[in-house]
Length: 133
Length: 408
Image 1: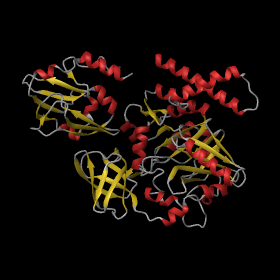
Image 2: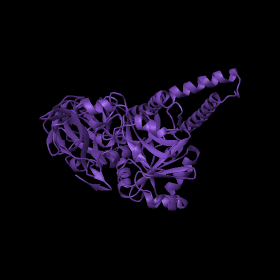
Image 3: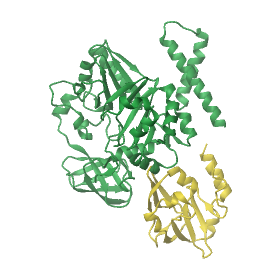
Image 4: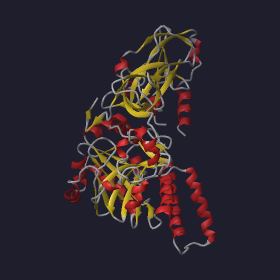
């Protein structure tokens, strides 16, 4: 509704409100969107998957908890976890401050083409707008 | 814009409906039958379709509140950050719109006798005008119908403040009991009143800035005492564990008083922070920590039940005879994570359940109230099932926080 200007065009998005960034080295970086952090409110806890864990697309693999509620985070594609942002353990509020910088974990997808099937910014904006009404 | 227009349309319709109710209760009918039917239809349609609004609804929206459906009421969850609002109340002063709660006036001869029988706590503790008492309203089987605050005004008038979601059920129960035992009483639901809580270490100082003429009258108020000031009723009560006041006033005066408080630096606080504040203060929330299936002894409310005097009251027999198998305790999570309502608590004496769990902004860790087997002791460690993990939590006495300071 109000974030149309802040939605980065270089990212891919999921229906469960994760953003996905394709890196040059073939890995992807995952976080939650501005819309998701707004809905959840002040973050107080982040639990990331273990590095090396094999994930299937849409598998529950992480949790963010705000004062108000817990939310599951899903793997956007099938692949292996290659890194986590351990900074969030002590400072989960970074997700509220800048959700597109405060990444959660990195994956190496089994099939890079899977990432291209995710929504682009315009499609995700349509989804957010439809949920707002 | 579209939203604003819709709201004013709803407000107008609601006013019309209230006018209709007043008309129904009066002897004379201002409108002919042809008028009443469409109005009746409109009234019930609105009742089904729209959330109820307090007199401060527009003020919340103007202050940027995130509004949520709270038991059928359109209420502010927060005005930006729940954490900031929580700290604001612990460190300075904040205000809450609690107009959804219901004021019930009970008037008539021998009203004290009736309340002595109706309530689990003993209204004989109330001997000076304005004195307040916290009590449960019990079923004959000891289950909690609601928790409430009752104020003694005079021997023909007691004022009761009950929860929003239970108000209609409470009034029906009170009326039913009064019909049998005290038909002379008048029980009036004061839907014409609003209520604003001002809480925090600087609540008093800021309230005198907002209401200078009331200072002389109200500054000497001890906790759990109230005084009438013009059309206001000022009580030194609250739901945060801080000093503060709950002010009952005419609905029409609510917006301007809210604005005056805002002008002297009392910040608006949403229901989100209200919940974390009351949890830190170790105060029960009806529907979470107790309900009709639990009795007050199992909900940490033994201190509010008078079993000492010979007085009979509804629910007493069961409370005296039934052994207490469970009790309410505090939990502090020893690990990272957040305790939540309904998580299962495992102990060497059997399982229990978290009744209210959240993150404590003051203690910067997760805390909870939990109902567990009575044999578990303060200081024991229990295991809480959180998703696929078992995390250790320490059993503690609550409150967790009082007057801005952690007690754990």
